[in-house]
Length: 346
View 1 (cartoon, rainbow, N blue to C red):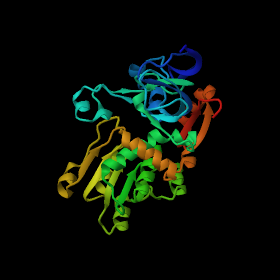
View 2 (cartoon, helix red, strand yellow):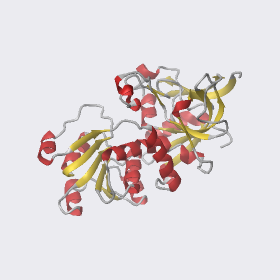
View 3 (cartoon, rainbow, N blue to C red):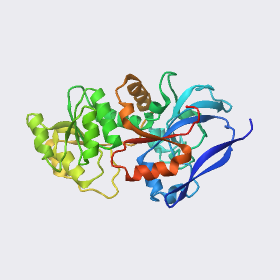
View 4 (cartoon, rainbow, N blue to C red):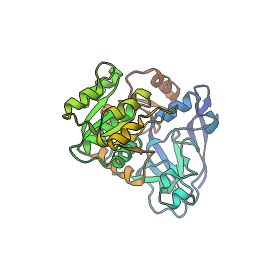
């Protein structure tokens, strides 16, 4: 199988992408080559754009991992997918022989490679990946909707680790893309969800999606939650804001024996009110990326309409316009999920 000339977008540093032609090598044993349909721009990609990850990704990297595509070819020994199948990539390549892997926690492998950051990613027409990272989609699932599966899988992992059960009161602190997805997955699981957010544009989107919202800049969030719950508080709290006020709020709104899930990545160490963990026997849960079952759940939630994909996707740009797409997303107060249309015929 020979190489093919394709178009790819390379991050060159200093907020610049270069769309160029390159060669897509044939898949090796255990690999599959995917013809990319769509790829979403995520918060991590924006960190790359801003130069915050240059030491990790370098200045010649194809980024992107929130994707959908079709299997174009497979290497020797690949039996879990076939040419022509619609797929998504779970972009985690584990070593298989570290303490985390040996205990069954491959998603947080101590030598984990994140595809699209530590390797080239999906902002190219053909992407070769380890076949074990692939999940097969139903032919009826729209490819633009399928590009949301990766971030929805994050939300599914968060909700699963929270132990949320039907009828419990939930507060999601932070109404950005991941916060809204967490809220939708929690609602799909039967939670009574309130979203706390200060950005009026994001509040409007959350309200359009049918959520009760609170702007903690205008109202006392803890008082509102207590009034809603008979002074009980929230059974499950998701901290998705990545801010100190969000961390302050997560203990203030928590019920006795509530579970608090730390979803956001904090740039600096936040101060946490540990006394509340003692006083009310709270539980703090760390949640990072996803496991295979979370991907399967995400596929099912999107297919069933539990996630409003059309509302989440706020703009779509061709690969040739990737520079403008990143610039627009960087200054947009309203965008939730921006997609790059990589394939020409999708």
